[in-house]
Length: 571
Image 1 (cartoon, one colour):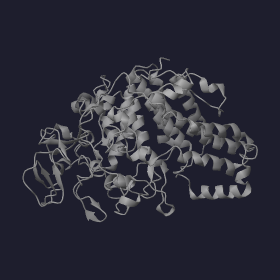
Image 2 (cartoon, helix red, strand yellow; image 1 turned 180 degrees about the vertical axis):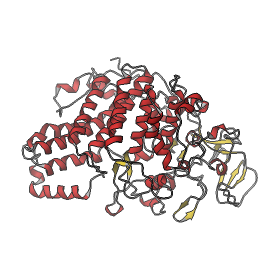
Image 3 (cartoon, one colour; image 1 turned 90 degrees about the vertical axis):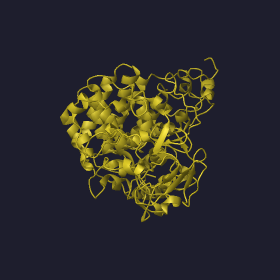
């Protein structure tokens, strides 16, 4: 889906020169067009729209929970996560790209392939920890198929070696839909932040060197990449995510969609179409947006019992540009959240095309894989966790994000002298956070990250690296409902929904019956809750890693199982 029209044309030209039925390693990989043709296919096998806008975790809850979020995982014979087919394609290319006599061309496309190998292995590291490292294309009789898992230190070091090679050999030109030097450094920033914080919070040595590497990679992009925070229009944050074409000044890498060629994604269906929708953002996201003057919403005495129309008033503008707020229009019409489709009442508007045709036909809004905002947040978090962050670091990173929406800057001294206690609670925050002198600013950077990158596919791994998986044990709370009755959601003087306890009647078209199609935390009042019947019990000793499929362990007894997962094999 990332392929540009020019790339597609070059592929067609290549096929005219070398017939498909004669493509072999000996006859292929001879020139730039052939190397481009082969590496183009790596894009569509690496980046998926649903991995971005569905964003599993604790702040976005779909109608059907992922097994990792429901705590219903158990060892199976096979698993899509333990799939190595894409790796063989990449290694096969790297073994045969030497057929191209032009060294500069070969190094460029080797850099692209090595980027994708690093991207592939980062996901494996995040899912499984130790995994076997393969840098050759194995056959069915290769003895390496039966090797043990390699230590995570070897894996992450090889990931970084691939990214360093890519950064050294790829163009410094900003190419929004293809891999370049800055994409490689952005992935290095992401990988090192994950590894550094995972090691820090899970008690693994050498975490500091990875956070330093994250800060260095991020800083290189900040100083040399030429990217800026998009700040045009009346609502630049919202408008950037509704743009048909990616915003090149901020999107380092994007997935391109085009309705004309019937390449689209289903973000609109996810929100509006009855067969796909019924998800919702949670109060864990909604409650942490600051007031627009920079004060804490949760410092209000009534913050837990405000109805939606009052809750969204005078908040950080990113709240009303990410979730529904009064005045939001869809398809040219003023709307209120449809509580039969938006399970928790907080309706997502980020990535949503303002066109009702997209509700059923798909959307062609480009989606971000790497955004400059993430690099800034990575930089600030790495420095804060290291204990080296300064106000100048914040001014170079967090301030730029807040300037876009006219929010006051984060002040290091104020954050550390008065940490937000709500952000340390299990209900809304991070009880495992570093308790040192930088606790306050770390919490504020996590707030900023959660808000700025909501629905961008990063939340689950954030919880894993912070050792906050138990966040999913909390009730999935939505908007507050005082009790049965009719409610005016947007404050326009007209009631929009009738919440019924079985008594009374209403002429409103939207009726929610307590205990039937809506559940309240305290029976007849409280926050809407969902998946209330699923008992979630996050296992701190097991659930930060996935299991190794039993069939693979039978075929290769050298593969050890991850701690806590019982597959009954005894090996």
